[in-house]
Image 1 (cartoon, one colour):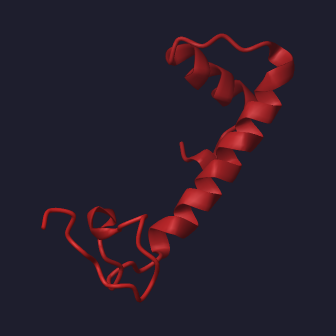
Image 2 (cartoon, rainbow, N blue to C red):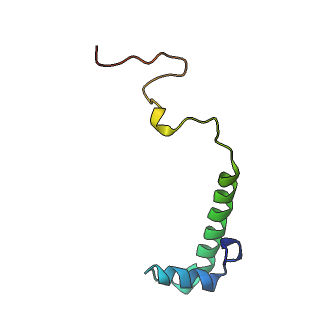
Length: 73
């Protein structure tokens, strides 16, 4: 079952399987939220990040275009 097909009873079953008990009034909201999250993640998976450098090279203290200077001189 995909999140696109997730029904309120299935959402409750999956929540119970994860150790979470949900009031019956929340089943529909949880199912709708799971479907929305799935739709957003599906779009993100389609994005091409081929030219994007990894997060490890990002320097939050440096402005774009500014040269990087080593602290140890």
